[in-house]
Image (cartoon, rainbow, N blue to C red; front, side):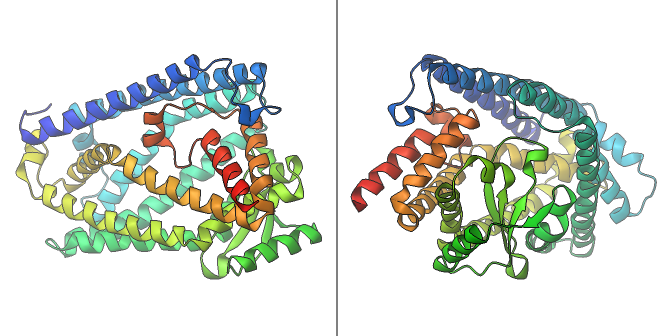
Length: 419
């Protein structure tokens, strides 16, 4: 059910081109991995041997294969819904004709449909792939509880964002895009504030760190970075996975530093401090604020383009949509912009990698010339079975951090400059 006009050609071209590009990138990445089989970089001597490299190759291959199957299946499912009138049919069966309520139910229903579609793939990843490589610590009951809470949370967040957006469309027919962008940005800010104290505790337990010496050292690092934290917490990440990490989150009075229990168990004090110094380097460099401002500009631009497309008759004509059915058209435009945005990802990833290098540089100066950070990265690469040889083009599209070999070499070089 598609009429061939300029918009339908644009939509289908972007949709299929993005899918093909993503598949090709995965193929290039796997070919690069196969060509490097058995070749362990000297920077990782003592941490990754030939046998470990085989395991890394196998783990990356299994994850890529699952990701590829899920991508093709989900894209085919979504395209079928669009082409065969599924969006209009869903909009028509909403139990009310009230624009805001029916539109909110429309987007909530779509979200739940696609959430359910992804569950079998997540199950396979958790209980087959992660289990096979010794990472999974979750139980079926815990997995089900997590997904139930995630689904309910998604419904709540979707409703709280979509309802005001539809109100703006109804109330301000020509300038709704300004209000819509402002609503989304405000929602992101509120979620950033609430995440550490209301959302994260739904899934994990957070306890104040009991190691007084480590707490004192972390507080000293935070003070050096100019950060006033409201707490340093240990998170029970090990209930679900053996992967390790650390992060800080929140804004204002909800700001806190979080250490995975798996990180505390697998790394020594200096390595933990180095990992945290890297995270604090983001705060020192105002990377979160800069990223948020850039994203805000992008949000306003995306909403403006959406408003132009909403007023273009070719959008409704392309998929035989009733002009009064604003929600299906809004969804299709969103998918179109998402597909187009994929080809801008190298810009966003390049900026992210730039920020990561700056954070590494800060950590090198903050903790023993970066030696503990390099050691921590080598340990995590071995423990997490990280791909050491990603294809450069894949890195451009998908890596928010520089590849591990590049990071370790750069940290060693910076340490050498510091003497």
